[in-house]
Length: 530
Image 1 (tube, rainbow, N blue to C red):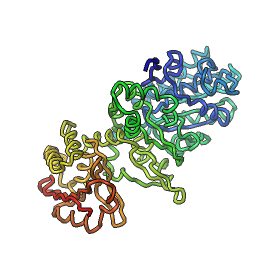
Image 2 (cartoon, one colour):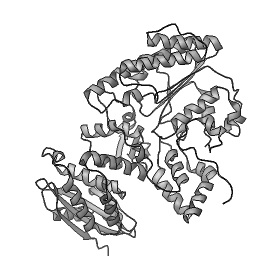
Image 3 (cartoon, one colour):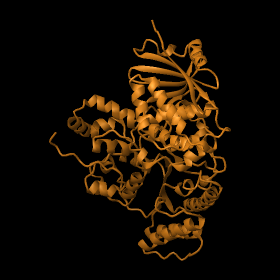
Image 4 (tube, rainbow, N blue to C red):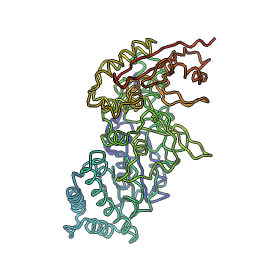
């Protein structure tokens, strides 16, 4: 391959820089053209590392009238008129929010900075709401055009403080009240004809009785099937834009391109944000893999949000059910700070995605989007649940399971259980559920394909582990006998759906002892399928 490829924009969220420095840009401007020409006020929630900041930057340059930056893109050759608009752009990643007073002062400072850059004197000094309204009014009057309002990561002043105790929750609630009042100004401005376009992004979608009760005319794009691929990279975009990068990867690492595509798909694809059957890749992870020519866990580097881990622990959520969770449409937005449900937060932050949608029942089936996210999430959770650090043992668990050496794998897991600090093994939390969760996290964090609570016609399999050559069907007991677990697998015929698939089927019964606080007994039996 002799042709020089454009650099990939890993972590770059400045549209102007991407275009001027000739980085690769996946053209999303058709979506933006449609938004601008068919509506006015929008909200979009997407996970971190998905390009929300770049989207805001792209809109910013469109409304600045920077047409030449868009040469070669869809919107450049459209009938868009490229008028320059006054813009208020807020990036809550860089706005301090340690408490309500600091947030309020930071917003007032930002308003003054925007006013100064426009040559406007903002006379109101103390009152945030009035100060914001004055800025919008004067911008509209100066330019005689509607003001564009762009906000990135609107929810950061809230989520920075949840899941960290009562005092931090109090700060989150106070910050929420400030934001509710602040965004309420937009409704007044809209009523006075001062605005022309609003676009707000964030990770979470707090219900409308919260922040957006004042601004109730936002069109929510988060699960809108028309814009399901407004962020992220589709298979078609890979075919069109990234094939040379995949070929370079294959050439340098001596790989078959179809096999590499399949591996990339398994690690980084799978995000589905609506009922429409369109799945997208995480752009940060995909670009990182193609740039480094290495399939690694790039999501893990940025860490799972502390608030999410803490909420799951506080509410004693049964983690294995996330492998196959069913929910109706109301789950995705009906929650408040005082009664947070981790499940919609997991969906909106990218740890769960839509696996399937039942149109008749209007029920969504959720699961982890891909290997990268599942491993990242379960590794972080394992550290929290066990108090242990990840080490080479977890890789050994994966290798032993993949090689069919299941006894050795279980012995490694026994040694891991024995290292869990006594303070985390309190008698009031030691039951089958706790052991099941930790066992599941060990296996999942190791990188093995795993599903929990798998429904069959006769019941639910506690754990199904799938490798290239084998299915492991696992049943747990607590303070009983591992033989009873094997008997249950056979009696319920949990193995039936997996027969005749060309893989070996291994039945595993495991008993946990609350006294020993470990696996006390296990039985392994190879199923004879003939």
